[in-house]
Image 1: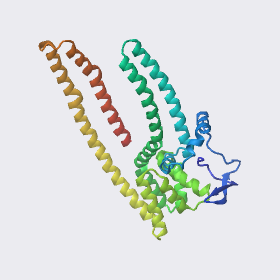
Image 2: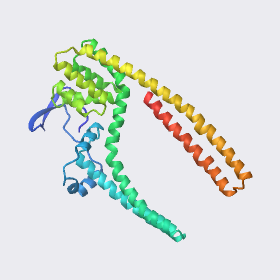
Image 3: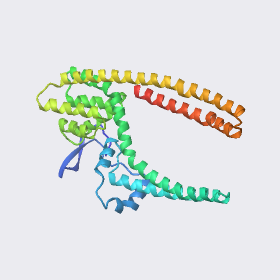
Image 4: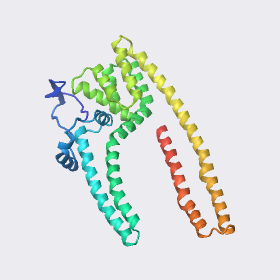
Length: 326
């Protein structure tokens, strides 16, 4: 999928859409191009092309690639997944053999065989499923980013609408406001459809709703199409949606603040007080109860592993919530 160009004085090229050949407009001096594959992707495509083309591409994968704005076809991506899986299988197989031999030579035959078998199996399977689920994960991440920026972007849209700006110009200007992040990217794709592909604005908005990973932005775009086609006024609709998203944003911010407060109380109890009492109790058992080395090992495990991991876990959750509030 090509990136969205700025269309000024157009030249034309031909493209096929829906079985029809149409003129596609470009900025003067520009030429149609496609996203180039990396050398590894080209090798994977040459090697596994027949395998991935033996069955129809997964519609869900194609949809996730579009929603994630990953500019690669579904069959090319699956070929890359297979290529990376083979490479990961070879690497983990070699690593498993080397590590397994080290354990075998040290006298741990069972552990060596277990590592030699499990490491390549888990590495291969894990690589395949992680890469296959990556488009869906990126699409969900884009959806969360859109939801975080939808309230201020709707204020921008309602302000433009109050100035009696046309709907296509509103989305064009919204696509240029990079401060709105992924919302601006979605608007830029709608502008691409209208100015580059020659699609009318309502069809472009409808297509944008279908490929958007955010349910809230989908509802907004579908409402634009419904309001326009039913003869309603878009200005009151934009004002209403801006107020709605502002209220929802305030409620979400309040919920996140309450969640952060709950996590702070839990942090004091679980990460500060509980390990302190546990260390004291284990130290007393080690001295009085005669636990000896075993109790000391448990004490070291709590101090060196449990407490740092718990702290890093709480830091990660607090950071994630703070990022959503940004």
